Structure formats: structure tokens, C-alpha cells
Length: 108
Image (cartoon, rainbow, N blue to C red; front, side, top):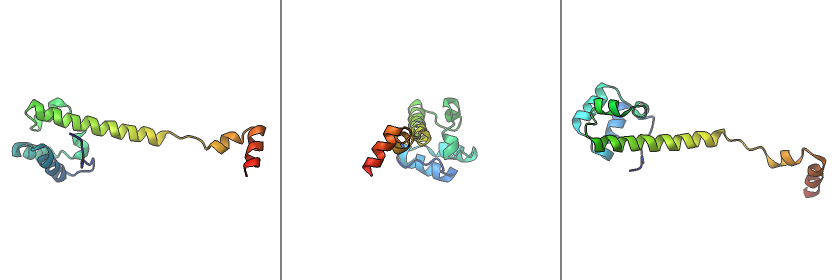
């Protein structure tokens, strides 16, 4: 399952709605998430024991949520890396030596 529609900015209520609609979590789990004030950002930080503590009792459901967390974090980490990468303008590199300056002047 993809994390389509998941938003790290989900409030507690929005997260519960998302999980009920996409993972069919039981009412008991919804109640525990509300009591523990688990929102979208907090969900991404939960480990297996904490998932079990807030009501994700079955292994299958915990693994589904862990996949959502892993996929979201992988995509988010990739986006952060892409934003950090900066490639200098090629014309700046070419213009650093005399031959490059000459080639640029002939282009334009």
C-alpha cells in the first residue's frame, strides 16, 4: 500500500480518519490514538512497541503502518537530498578560463 493521501501535518482527528479509511483500524485503536494525541508527525516516529501500545495489535496491521512510515520517510529523505544538491551554472564554470570565455563570446 502506498501512502497516498497521508500528510505529516495531519491533526489527531485527520490521522484517525485517514487510518480508518485506508487501514480499517478498529475503534479501540482510534480511541488510543486520540488519548495519546498521535498526529501525523508523531505517527512517523513510532516504533513497533509504541504502535502496539497505541492499539495496533495485529502484526499485519503494524507491518502495514511500518511500510507507510518507511515509504513516507524514504520519499521525504530523497526530496531533502535533492533540495540540498546544488549544481553551479555551467556558464559560470566555462567562464573561469580564457578558452571558456572565448567560447562564450563566440556564442553570443
